[in-house]
Length: 75
Image: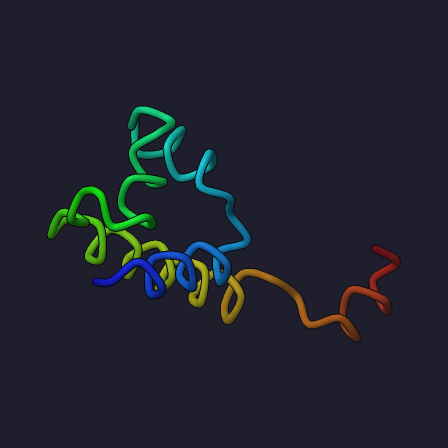
């Protein structure tokens, strides 16, 4: 994973770097070192982000009501 792919994955999740740090238990400066190319992105990061993106996709597909259904249920 390169820095642009990392940033794109965070954007797709609607997360900031600080959100990723908090959820992954990382020092707040770690992702900025990855994005700036000072430290390589570890191999677990793309796998972790891929799982999170899959979970987001599945949540949207199976757990969220479509907007029209939300409106008809008074939500």
